[in-house]
Length: 101
Image 1: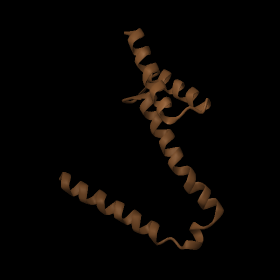
Image 2: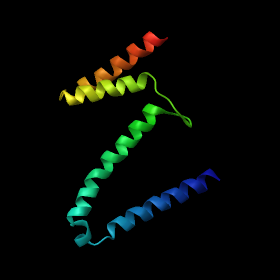
Image 3: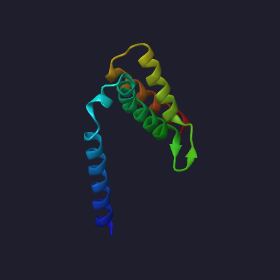
Image 4: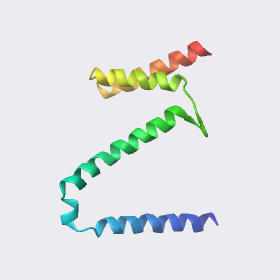
């Protein structure tokens, strides 16, 4: 049963890929389509970050992860390098977890 589901999902992914390849080039070169295509990965990543930060099962949770996200946002506003942003998020999250037990 699980292999049938895997095969069905693989076929669906292939169909979506094939559909994307069959779109005429004139449609893909429109300015609005280009802008939307550039924003889709950003929106997807933002949604994943929000889900992993504030979601636990089916509940909304504000805990140490939110403080880490805030620290990362502050580091980004200060134009810190990527590794500094990650380190700030990790350190703040760890510190809040250590303080709250």
